[in-house]
Length: 51
Image (cartoon, rainbow, N blue to C red; front, side):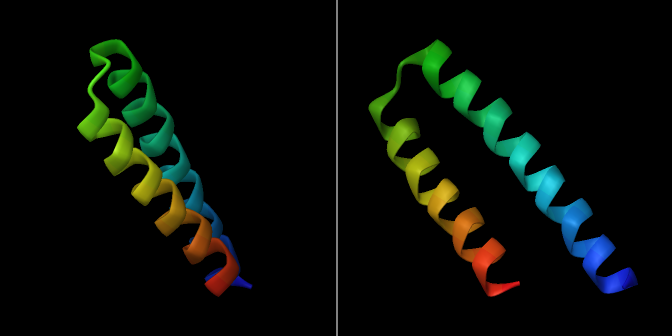
């Protein structure tokens, strides 16, 4: 149970980081950052399904 809670907390932190990164990327309008963001989101999504 504690492991599930820990992974949920980590997922929440990663989601918050992704949101902040997205806002920064949109603000800067940098194509390179948007590509990195898409890879990051894919990684987070994969982590969710792997967990």
